[in-house]
Image (cartoon, rainbow, N blue to C red):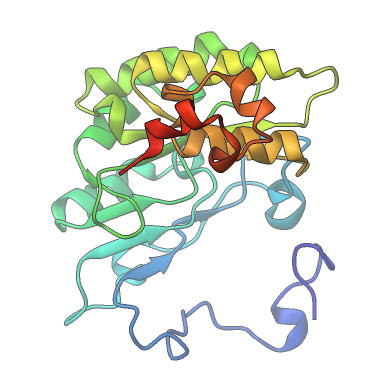
Length: 249
C-alpha cells in the first residue's frame, strides 16, 4: 500500500489507520516497549529518506505513553531519528531516569551535535542495545570531513561515563563521489584506536563494500591485513592454511 521503497509520501491515514497505538498482537513473545518520542530530523542528508518521509522535528509520545505498563519490563526501544533534536529532550531523559527505565536509542545519537548537557544526560541513564543485554550507544561517522566534530562528541560521552567499547559507530561506505578504500580503512582504524566499535554500512552492496563490512564486523581486521583479506575474496575459508589457523577454535 506504500512505505519506503514504494511510495515515500503515503501515510497510514490515507489507508484508514488513525491510531498511534502499537499493536503487539502479531508478536506475543515480545516483551519490551517500542515507539517514538519524536519524529523527523533537523538535518537533510542526501542519503537519508527521513526528511522527505517525516518532515521537520516534532514531538510524538512521552516515555509513559510508550511503555506498555505492568507486567512488562521497563525496557524502552526508541526509534527516534534525532532524539536530541526535539525541544523537550531533557523532559524525556528525566522520564527515563526517574522511571528507572532501560533505554535503547536504537536509531542512534548524532554525536557531532552533542553538548556537555546532552552527553551528561546519556551518561545518567541505563542505555542498552535493543536486546537489553549489552550496554550500547549507537552513532555514525558518514563523512570523513566530520572527524573533528565526531571525536569531540565521543570524548564528551567518555567524559560523562560512557565507555568507548559501549559505542558502536556506523560508517557509511560506497556513497561519496571519489571515495576510496583508503577512506574506509582510515575511519575504521581511527575508531578502533579510540576503542569504539566500527560498523560499516554499504550504501551500494558490492563485493568490496560487503567484504569490508564482514572484515570489520567480524573483527578480522584485528588479525588479517586488508590486502590479504581482499586476496582471499573476503572469505576466511579462502585464506592461506597458515593464516586460517588464526580462526581455529
